[in-house]
Image (cartoon, rainbow, N blue to C red):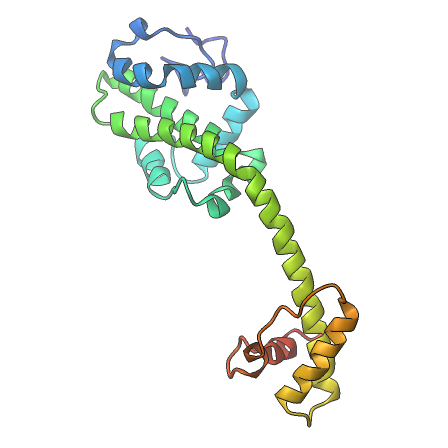
Length: 222
């Protein structure tokens, strides 16, 4: 049934690009009842040969195309931890939705092959739930992360400016106290960034640990 589709050897019974109806797969009745609409949407709008190849390649880099590897991927995935999990997206343009849909279909084919859904049912459901939740939540949050990226870039720019002034002040005035150096830094920062408030507390320059901006400046010499 899947001879004309790519990766038919990996999905010999039910292919992620194959249109199917629930009555043809009674062993999957509960899963298809819950996720039939999602699976149809993925097939029509998300999956193609390249995306399946990327997902399979990513799974292979973490083990075999089997239940053990997919279960391990599930256990290390947090749907809300976008800042770390989205790194999966950058690998060969991989997206987490593809990864979990393909993981689900690997397990679905295993269940059909073994005529046993019980061993893998909960992990199939978790894969499809992760795909569904990530697709929905990422759509809601991607704008926030774009905004956060801009904010972080501005913060990095300000820190770079302050470190540069701190380094110059520290090197040019070795005999002055930290309080005196801090006054010089604030004055120079005001000239450099007249429309910005000085972003650091005084303790950031006087505390006795690596968070001290003078210590950081000494470590990051030009």
